[in-house]
Image (cartoon, rainbow, N blue to C red; front, side):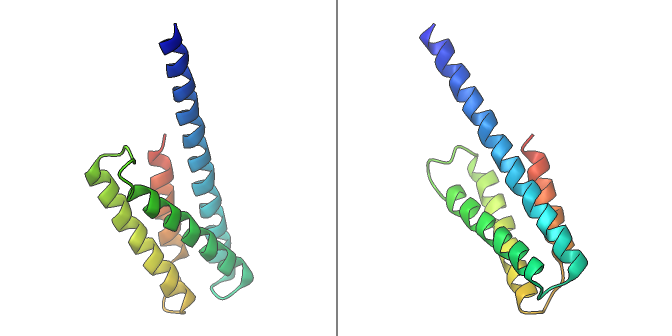
Amino acid sequence: MYQLCYDEITEDSTAEERDREHAVFTESIRLLEEASSVGAGTPVALEALSYVDQLWMILIEDLGQPANLLPEATRAALISIGIWVLKEVERIRRGQSNNFKGIASINAIIRDGLN
């Protein structure tokens, strides 16, 4: 009986975590799409880039923790993707790229993989 209750609680908390992760990625995509329509260097773009930067920094840090339960190969692949995203964010900030849509596409793929 106790084990069943514990399993239900951990299952619910995992589902809630996935819902929060999904919402965070959805927000990043929304911000990037808005930034794409108004262009780099605008307050909207700076907000989007800051949000994405923070999101991926947190993810990369979490993925690098030994306590992360994802398989090592998956964690490594996601860290590589995150590094690319961070570099692309910096390229946009420097005016070397306008690839908001590319970052949004990556974030959508990751978000959709959470389901």
